[in-house]
Image 1 (spheres, rainbow, N blue to C red):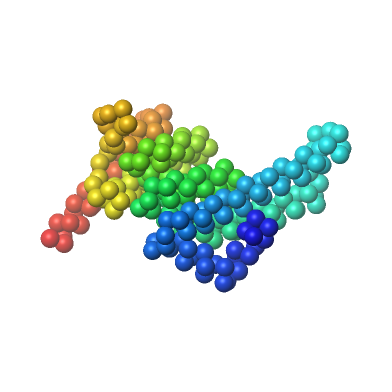
Image 2: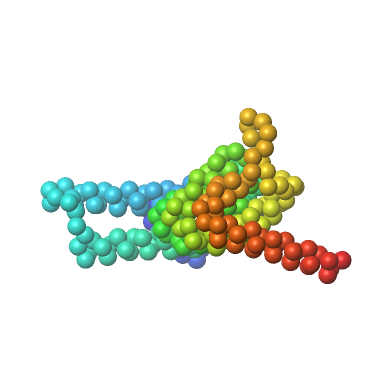
Length: 232
């Protein structure tokens, strides 16, 4: 139903159902089903656009050039899916930090597709993605590192801007889910590896950026210590 009528998910009653299904207290099975449905909507819309472009090109027998009408239809479709993802983005980001690793992975994969299709501003996702490079689950961490590399390539300035927030959010995530926090995560082969190695690698290209990152992070830590002292 979601693939055939994605606009239904923007109506009041379905929105309420979706919010309940994606809420923290919902079962992992329901959360994953919702994520699967949203993912299918994106994949289906992408497939339709590719088929339309291919059909148009085959009829003309030459490279397809969009007309004004073609462009309007494409814009309308992107507007629908973009509006849909923007509507549920806060819930998706929350699910990417869920207690269940399978839910986190499904949510992260969906966010990856959303970013690839340009349906939301990447600024809104950067910190959550960076935070998951500190995930103790290897599957989630590997996907998060790939996404950090993608953000570095496509949106480097945004990655730099939200890097400190991402690191701090990672510690919050680790404390809540694993009841511990560390800049290192365990490897399957044994030993530990730096959780933020992909981020650090992205920041090392310019000394000014790495210096800015370290300075901002230290300032945040100092401010946190001062806050604790004032409340003690």
